Amino acid sequence: MLSSIKNHLLDVAEKKMINNDPSHDFLHAKRVLMLAESIHKKEGGDMEVLFPAALFHDAVIYPKNDPKSKFAPEESAEFISKELEVNNKYPKEKIEKVKTAIMECSFSKGIKPSSLESKILQDADRLEAAGAISIMRTFSSTGQMSRAFYHFDDPFAKRRNPDPLLYALDLFYTRLLKVGKLMNTRTAKDMAKKRTKFLKDFLTELRLELGGK
Image 1 (cartoon, rainbow, N blue to C red):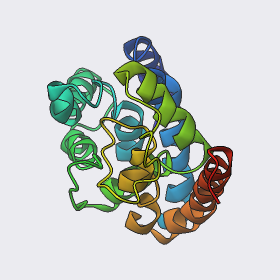
Image 2: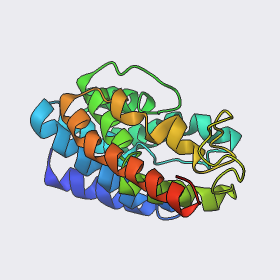
Image 3: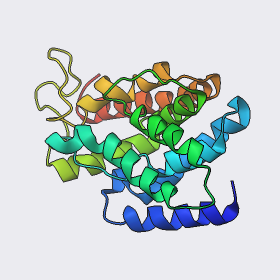
Image 4: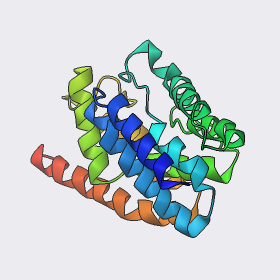
């Protein structure tokens, strides 16, 4: 991809995502792009598709407890497709592939990716839901959603079904600890192992600090 297109898209993304919440802001987009590039180096794929898809996969975002949240992938895909359509230097035949990769990226929708680019983007985004950064993002969203850190009587969901809309810690059990097993590529699976171990170590320390054994 031409450096002029990359620089333009980076500029558009930074301006578009300046008011997003910290867990889905421009820095998140750049990290997902960096991870996609790392996976691409070993797995292949088309960076002309991956670059805009990774950078704009969360171009439109709503709080997770907002009913409009389920429409965010489609709105993000539509935003970048319009941007690419007016760019005379971007291959028009690849725009639909960018849109598809974004719409298949969502964790909550559980869509099976239909292309290598979709697999890589899905993996890159899911790596952001594991490890140290995922903890930071979880509690950033918690402040925005005004949800509790954890259930007072059963913090680790031993005797109840976890509800991540009510308790931040419950997201570990519905998403963060699961993503490592849901990776599509071998490269991402290897990257996820260390991050998942960090999550488990965090829970061990938290259990001790809350008076557990």
